[in-house]
Image 1: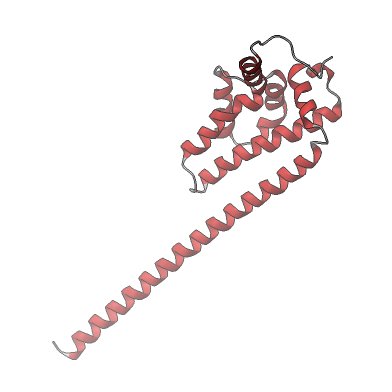
Image 2: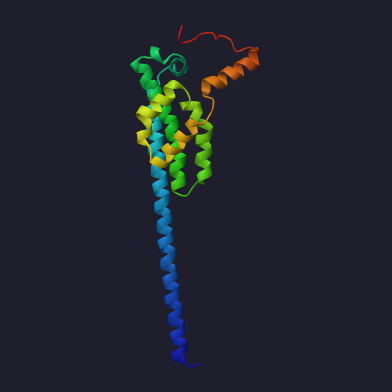
Length: 182
């Protein structure tokens, strides 16, 4: 093998190494951009949820109970607290969807979250009206269609779960004490 042939092989190998290095740099830049995008999505959701949490007020339990049991007795302040409560929780479910879009979660992960919580938060008159009239327009089509499909199925909201747990603990499901409607 003469020195000219050896020089060509070394030059070709060096060019391939440079090309491979450029490809690896491009991949790393892409991954860094994806991680930065994900961090910004998460940070935005955290800030939004903190703002909404501040709107919840001092006694969110009574407001939630009133919204479920007797929404006709809600005040505008109650509505704002419920809007904060529901939006924060739906926003957390949507964050799972967004992270799936970034490739960090599988699609089954966000769907499992929606399956578990759609009825819990939205399966009552107020929650469903809030979703249909106010919230679903903030989220993308795939997410809202999936939530809508879950709400068309039978499921228990938080109040129904409470009634079943209460019945099991105290032995009946009649009446309740300290109703926000009385």
